[in-house]
Image (cartoon, rainbow, N blue to C red; front, side):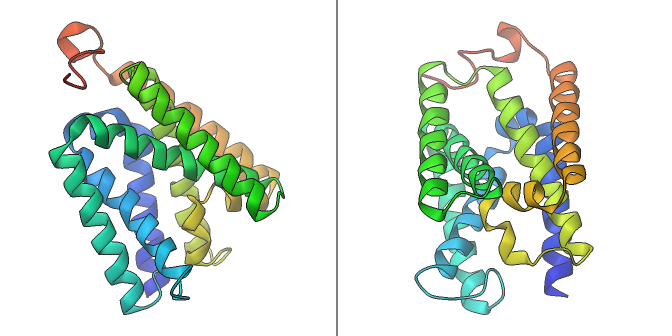
Length: 210
């Protein structure tokens, strides 16, 4: 039952991020921040405390507390929260991508941190142009969606989502990797053609107030 709940939750969150990531950022950033924090909290519980990834009461408590903390930051400090959320997604993609290619944990962490810093700098210096948000959320959402499907198919365990599921998608088979790329591209196209652009839509200054 726990695996089913996590799998369905991953699919729903992934679908939302993939097809409506920019709208999520503009309207309900605290919700996305909560889920990013939830994953981070679960990973923190799994590392120093040795708890199974979202497989125990303590793991869920820590994950929810960290999720609420990130959501609160997202609600109170919009500008900083966007950069932090994008950095979190960047870390998941960088770490998962490196791990999926077979690198060791140290290299994967370095790749994740490097991409997180890069994404955060882009967010801060360029004031998060629409395409950056769309690109990141589409591919992160695609990986979360496929990760949820792999859980429901009993191909992976919930704790393998801790890296944003990018690594498990890449490692599963070339077909899943191709599906990730295709879904990411579809997400980019759907968001791009359904997102209003121009000063009236908040691009770019109105998206993040000075």
